[in-house]
Image (cartoon, rainbow, N blue to C red; front, top):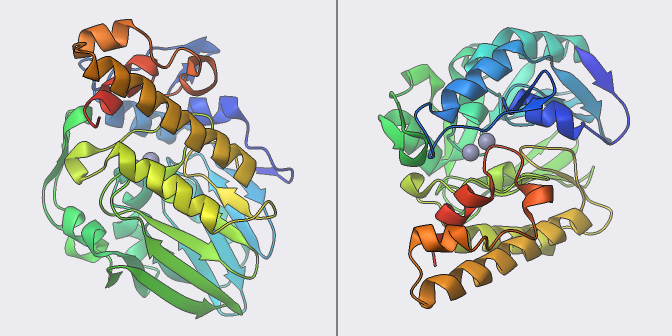
Length: 317
Ligand SMILES: [Zn+2]
Ligand SMILES: [Zn+2]
Protein backbone atom coordinates (compact mmCIF):
# COMPACT_ATOMS: atom_id res chain seq x y z
CA UNK A 1 0.00 0.00 0.00
CA UNK A 2 1.20 3.51 -0.75
CA UNK A 3 0.45 6.36 1.61
CA UNK A 4 -0.25 9.98 0.88
CA UNK A 5 -0.51 12.58 3.56
CA UNK A 6 -1.20 15.63 1.42
CA UNK A 7 -4.54 16.39 -0.11
CA UNK A 8 -4.02 15.00 -3.57
CA UNK A 9 -4.70 11.60 -4.94
CA UNK A 10 -3.21 12.27 -8.33
CA UNK A 11 -5.37 12.58 -11.36
CA UNK A 12 -3.13 10.20 -13.29
CA UNK A 13 -3.51 7.55 -10.59
CA UNK A 14 -7.26 8.00 -10.78
CA UNK A 15 -7.33 7.62 -14.55
CA UNK A 16 -5.05 4.60 -14.36
CA UNK A 17 -7.14 3.04 -11.63
CA UNK A 18 -10.28 3.23 -13.72
CA UNK A 19 -8.50 1.78 -16.74
CA UNK A 20 -8.05 4.84 -18.85
CA UNK A 21 -4.31 5.25 -18.95
CA UNK A 22 -1.81 2.49 -19.34
CA UNK A 23 1.88 3.05 -19.90
CA UNK A 24 1.25 6.77 -20.24
CA UNK A 25 -0.94 6.35 -23.31
CA UNK A 26 -4.45 7.64 -23.30
CA UNK A 27 -6.77 4.88 -24.41
CA UNK A 28 -10.21 5.53 -25.74
CA UNK A 29 -12.67 3.75 -23.55
CA UNK A 30 -15.19 1.44 -25.13
CA UNK A 31 -18.56 1.17 -23.49
CA UNK A 32 -21.95 2.67 -24.25
CA UNK A 33 -19.93 3.42 -27.01
CA UNK A 34 -18.38 0.21 -28.33
CA UNK A 35 -18.13 -3.51 -27.85
CA UNK A 36 -16.42 -4.02 -24.52
CA UNK A 37 -18.21 -2.99 -21.35
CA UNK A 38 -16.24 -0.62 -19.12
CA UNK A 39 -17.10 -2.98 -16.28
CA UNK A 40 -14.48 -5.38 -17.62
CA UNK A 41 -11.88 -2.61 -18.02
CA UNK A 42 -12.52 -1.28 -14.53
CA UNK A 43 -12.23 -4.73 -12.98
CA UNK A 44 -8.97 -5.42 -14.82
CA UNK A 45 -7.58 -2.06 -13.79
CA UNK A 46 -8.55 -2.56 -10.15
CA UNK A 47 -6.91 -6.00 -10.14
CA UNK A 48 -3.61 -4.36 -11.04
CA UNK A 49 -3.92 -1.12 -9.07
CA UNK A 50 -2.13 -0.44 -5.83
CA UNK A 51 -4.14 0.95 -2.94
CA UNK A 52 -3.27 4.49 -1.91
CA UNK A 53 -4.17 5.64 1.57
CA UNK A 54 -4.76 9.32 2.15
CA UNK A 55 -5.31 10.57 5.70
CA UNK A 56 -7.84 13.39 6.00
CA UNK A 57 -8.74 14.40 9.57
CA UNK A 58 -10.70 13.17 12.57
CA UNK A 59 -9.43 9.59 12.10
CA UNK A 60 -10.90 9.41 8.62
CA UNK A 61 -8.86 8.32 5.66
CA UNK A 62 -9.55 7.42 2.06
CA UNK A 63 -8.42 4.27 0.30
CA UNK A 64 -8.20 4.72 -3.43
CA UNK A 65 -7.52 2.24 -6.23
CA UNK A 66 -10.35 -0.28 -5.84
CA UNK A 67 -13.01 1.42 -7.94
CA UNK A 68 -14.74 4.17 -5.97
CA UNK A 69 -13.00 6.05 -3.18
CA UNK A 70 -13.47 4.23 0.11
CA UNK A 71 -13.73 6.25 3.33
CA UNK A 72 -12.60 4.62 6.56
CA UNK A 73 -13.47 6.04 9.99
CA UNK A 74 -11.60 4.54 12.94
CA UNK A 75 -12.13 5.01 16.66
CA UNK A 76 -12.54 3.36 20.03
CA UNK A 77 -15.77 1.61 18.97
CA UNK A 78 -14.28 0.19 15.79
CA UNK A 79 -14.13 0.99 12.12
CA UNK A 80 -16.74 2.16 9.65
CA UNK A 81 -16.21 1.82 5.95
CA UNK A 82 -18.07 3.79 3.28
CA UNK A 83 -18.10 1.67 0.12
CA UNK A 84 -15.90 -1.37 -0.34
CA UNK A 85 -14.74 -1.25 -3.94
CA UNK A 86 -14.61 -3.86 -6.65
CA UNK A 87 -14.61 -7.51 -5.61
CA UNK A 88 -11.17 -8.19 -7.14
CA UNK A 89 -9.62 -5.68 -4.72
CA UNK A 90 -10.78 -7.36 -1.52
CA UNK A 91 -7.43 -8.75 -0.42
CA UNK A 92 -5.62 -5.47 -0.94
CA UNK A 93 -8.38 -3.44 0.73
CA UNK A 94 -8.49 -5.86 3.60
CA UNK A 95 -4.77 -5.51 4.15
CA UNK A 96 -5.00 -1.73 3.98
CA UNK A 97 -7.74 -1.78 6.62
CA UNK A 98 -5.73 -4.09 8.87
CA UNK A 99 -2.68 -1.85 8.52
CA UNK A 100 -4.67 1.04 9.96
CA UNK A 101 -5.15 -0.75 13.30
CA UNK A 102 -6.71 -3.70 15.01
CA UNK A 103 -10.10 -2.12 15.82
CA UNK A 104 -12.86 -4.34 14.43
CA UNK A 105 -14.78 -3.40 11.32
CA UNK A 106 -18.29 -2.73 12.57
CA UNK A 107 -20.15 -1.00 9.77
CA UNK A 108 -20.12 -0.97 6.00
CA UNK A 109 -22.14 1.73 4.23
CA UNK A 110 -22.93 1.52 0.51
CA UNK A 111 -23.32 4.87 -1.26
CA UNK A 112 -25.25 3.02 -4.02
CA UNK A 113 -25.53 -0.39 -5.60
CA UNK A 114 -22.86 -0.24 -8.36
CA UNK A 115 -20.17 -2.91 -8.54
CA UNK A 116 -17.29 -0.48 -8.00
CA UNK A 117 -18.78 0.50 -4.61
CA UNK A 118 -20.65 -2.54 -3.33
CA UNK A 119 -18.65 -5.24 -5.13
CA UNK A 120 -16.95 -6.31 -1.90
CA UNK A 121 -20.17 -6.62 0.13
CA UNK A 122 -20.22 -10.37 0.27
CA UNK A 123 -16.69 -10.59 1.47
CA UNK A 124 -16.92 -7.78 4.02
CA UNK A 125 -20.22 -9.08 5.34
CA UNK A 126 -18.19 -11.85 6.93
CA UNK A 127 -16.48 -9.23 9.07
CA UNK A 128 -19.15 -6.64 9.77
CA UNK A 129 -22.39 -7.02 11.63
CA UNK A 130 -24.21 -4.21 9.92
CA UNK A 131 -24.35 -3.07 6.33
CA UNK A 132 -26.26 0.17 5.79
CA UNK A 133 -27.71 1.43 2.49
CA UNK A 134 -30.71 2.97 0.82
CA UNK A 135 -33.54 0.54 0.21
CA UNK A 136 -33.01 0.76 -3.57
CA UNK A 137 -29.44 -0.49 -3.15
CA UNK A 138 -30.79 -3.63 -1.56
CA UNK A 139 -33.47 -3.84 -4.24
CA UNK A 140 -31.00 -3.63 -7.14
CA UNK A 141 -28.54 -6.03 -5.54
CA UNK A 142 -31.33 -8.54 -4.90
CA UNK A 143 -32.19 -9.09 -8.56
CA UNK A 144 -30.42 -9.32 -11.91
CA UNK A 145 -29.85 -5.69 -12.88
CA UNK A 146 -28.64 -4.35 -16.21
CA UNK A 147 -26.72 -1.14 -16.70
CA UNK A 148 -27.90 -0.65 -20.24
CA UNK A 149 -25.29 1.90 -21.29
CA UNK A 150 -22.53 -0.39 -19.98
CA UNK A 151 -24.05 -3.30 -21.86
CA UNK A 152 -23.69 -5.39 -18.72
CA UNK A 153 -26.06 -7.38 -16.52
CA UNK A 154 -25.16 -8.06 -12.91
CA UNK A 155 -26.51 -11.25 -11.42
CA UNK A 156 -28.38 -11.08 -8.10
CA UNK A 157 -25.93 -10.76 -5.23
CA UNK A 158 -25.81 -13.59 -2.69
CA UNK A 159 -28.05 -13.07 0.36
CA UNK A 160 -25.11 -12.32 2.63
CA UNK A 161 -24.04 -9.46 0.33
CA UNK A 162 -27.29 -7.57 0.86
CA UNK A 163 -27.48 -4.53 3.17
CA UNK A 164 -28.96 -5.39 6.55
CA UNK A 165 -30.08 -1.90 7.59
CA UNK A 166 -31.95 0.02 4.94
CA UNK A 167 -33.67 3.38 4.93
CA UNK A 168 -35.75 5.59 2.66
CA UNK A 169 -34.90 9.23 3.24
CA UNK A 170 -32.27 9.58 5.93
CA UNK A 171 -30.46 7.62 8.60
CA UNK A 172 -28.47 9.08 11.49
CA UNK A 173 -26.00 7.12 13.62
CA UNK A 174 -23.70 7.86 16.52
CA UNK A 175 -20.34 6.10 16.27
CA UNK A 176 -16.85 6.83 17.62
CA UNK A 177 -18.10 10.03 19.24
CA UNK A 178 -19.43 11.51 16.01
CA UNK A 179 -22.81 11.84 14.40
CA UNK A 180 -22.95 10.31 10.94
CA UNK A 181 -25.79 11.49 8.73
CA UNK A 182 -26.84 9.58 5.64
CA UNK A 183 -29.23 11.17 3.19
CA UNK A 184 -30.87 9.86 0.04
CA UNK A 185 -30.48 11.94 -3.09
CA UNK A 186 -33.83 11.71 -4.84
CA UNK A 187 -32.61 10.00 -7.99
CA UNK A 188 -29.27 11.36 -9.17
CA UNK A 189 -26.62 9.01 -10.62
CA UNK A 190 -29.00 6.12 -9.78
CA UNK A 191 -32.11 5.94 -7.61
CA UNK A 192 -30.08 4.50 -4.73
CA UNK A 193 -27.45 7.20 -4.05
CA UNK A 194 -26.82 8.52 -0.55
CA UNK A 195 -24.43 11.04 0.97
CA UNK A 196 -22.58 10.24 4.17
CA UNK A 197 -21.63 13.19 6.39
CA UNK A 198 -19.22 12.85 9.32
CA UNK A 199 -20.27 15.77 11.51
CA UNK A 200 -17.31 15.97 13.86
CA UNK A 201 -14.67 15.89 11.14
CA UNK A 202 -16.83 17.92 8.73
CA UNK A 203 -16.21 15.46 5.91
CA UNK A 204 -18.83 14.60 3.30
CA UNK A 205 -18.75 11.52 1.06
CA UNK A 206 -20.99 12.27 -1.90
CA UNK A 207 -21.10 8.90 -3.59
CA UNK A 208 -21.15 8.88 -7.37
CA UNK A 209 -22.91 12.25 -7.56
CA UNK A 210 -19.49 13.83 -8.15
CA UNK A 211 -16.39 12.69 -9.94
CA UNK A 212 -13.74 15.33 -9.28
CA UNK A 213 -12.34 16.07 -12.73
CA UNK A 214 -14.55 13.82 -14.84
CA UNK A 215 -17.92 14.00 -16.52
CA UNK A 216 -20.41 11.92 -14.57
CA UNK A 217 -21.98 8.73 -15.77
CA UNK A 218 -25.75 8.87 -15.36
CA UNK A 219 -27.20 5.39 -15.00
CA UNK A 220 -30.59 5.89 -16.62
CA UNK A 221 -31.45 2.22 -16.32
CA UNK A 222 -31.14 2.52 -12.51
CA UNK A 223 -33.27 5.65 -12.37
CA UNK A 224 -30.53 8.29 -12.72
CA UNK A 225 -31.24 11.67 -14.33
CA UNK A 226 -29.26 14.78 -15.24
CA UNK A 227 -31.64 17.03 -13.30
CA UNK A 228 -31.13 14.74 -10.33
CA UNK A 229 -27.36 15.14 -10.68
CA UNK A 230 -27.72 18.94 -10.68
CA UNK A 231 -30.03 18.75 -7.65
CA UNK A 232 -27.52 16.51 -5.88
CA UNK A 233 -24.69 18.98 -6.57
CA UNK A 234 -26.88 21.81 -5.24
CA UNK A 235 -27.71 19.77 -2.17
CA UNK A 236 -24.03 19.02 -1.58
CA UNK A 237 -23.27 22.72 -1.77
CA UNK A 238 -26.07 23.56 0.67
CA UNK A 239 -24.79 21.22 3.35
CA UNK A 240 -21.09 22.14 3.10
CA UNK A 241 -18.90 25.17 3.77
CA UNK A 242 -15.50 26.16 2.41
CA UNK A 243 -13.97 24.18 5.28
CA UNK A 244 -15.72 20.88 4.49
CA UNK A 245 -13.60 18.14 2.96
CA UNK A 246 -15.58 16.50 0.18
CA UNK A 247 -14.84 12.95 -0.90
CA UNK A 248 -15.89 12.50 -4.50
CA UNK A 249 -16.43 8.92 -5.35
CA UNK A 250 -13.93 9.08 -8.14
CA UNK A 251 -10.97 11.44 -8.44
CA UNK A 252 -8.98 13.56 -6.01
CA UNK A 253 -10.37 14.70 -2.66
CA UNK A 254 -12.12 18.00 -3.20
CA UNK A 255 -13.73 21.08 -1.77
CA UNK A 256 -16.82 23.21 -2.22
CA UNK A 257 -15.23 25.50 -4.79
CA UNK A 258 -14.47 22.55 -7.07
CA UNK A 259 -17.93 21.16 -6.49
CA UNK A 260 -19.42 24.49 -7.56
CA UNK A 261 -17.35 24.44 -10.73
CA UNK A 262 -18.70 20.95 -11.45
CA UNK A 263 -22.29 22.04 -10.80
CA UNK A 264 -21.88 25.05 -13.10
CA UNK A 265 -20.46 22.79 -15.83
CA UNK A 266 -23.47 20.46 -15.55
CA UNK A 267 -25.91 23.36 -15.80
CA UNK A 268 -24.11 24.91 -18.76
CA UNK A 269 -23.88 21.64 -20.72
CA UNK A 270 -27.56 20.97 -19.99
CA UNK A 271 -28.40 24.38 -21.43
CA UNK A 272 -26.21 23.88 -24.53
CA UNK A 273 -27.60 20.43 -25.31
CA UNK A 274 -31.16 21.48 -24.60
CA UNK A 275 -30.93 24.39 -27.06
CA UNK A 276 -29.56 22.12 -29.79
CA UNK A 277 -32.20 19.46 -29.20
CA UNK A 278 -35.03 21.99 -29.15
CA UNK A 279 -33.77 23.47 -32.41
CA UNK A 280 -34.42 20.08 -33.97
CA UNK A 281 -30.94 18.60 -33.97
CA UNK A 282 -30.66 14.83 -33.92
CA UNK A 283 -28.42 13.15 -31.36
CA UNK A 284 -25.73 12.78 -34.00
CA UNK A 285 -26.07 16.42 -35.01
CA UNK A 286 -25.94 17.52 -31.38
CA UNK A 287 -22.76 15.55 -30.75
CA UNK A 288 -21.25 17.02 -33.93
CA UNK A 289 -21.97 20.53 -32.60
CA UNK A 290 -19.71 19.76 -29.61
CA UNK A 291 -21.78 21.33 -26.82
CA UNK A 292 -19.19 20.26 -24.26
CA UNK A 293 -16.16 21.66 -26.14
CA UNK A 294 -15.31 24.25 -23.48
CA UNK A 295 -15.08 21.54 -20.82
CA UNK A 296 -13.62 18.49 -22.54
CA UNK A 297 -10.00 19.26 -21.72
CA UNK A 298 -10.74 19.34 -18.01
CA UNK A 299 -13.63 16.89 -17.61
CA UNK A 300 -13.63 14.66 -20.65
CA UNK A 301 -10.59 12.43 -20.23
CA UNK A 302 -11.90 9.64 -18.05
CA UNK A 303 -14.51 7.05 -18.92
CA UNK A 304 -17.14 9.52 -20.05
CA UNK A 305 -15.80 11.71 -22.87
CA UNK A 306 -17.55 14.76 -24.30
CA UNK A 307 -19.50 12.82 -26.93
CA UNK A 308 -20.73 10.25 -24.45
CA UNK A 309 -21.68 12.90 -21.94
CA UNK A 310 -23.62 14.67 -24.67
CA UNK A 311 -25.49 11.42 -25.34
CA UNK A 312 -26.37 11.05 -21.68
CA UNK A 313 -27.53 14.65 -21.41
CA UNK A 314 -29.47 14.55 -24.71
CA UNK A 315 -31.60 11.72 -23.32
CA UNK A 316 -32.58 13.89 -20.36
CA UNK A 317 -33.44 17.28 -21.87
ZN1 LIG B 1 -18.56 4.60 -9.43
ZN1 LIG C 1 -21.96 4.38 -9.65
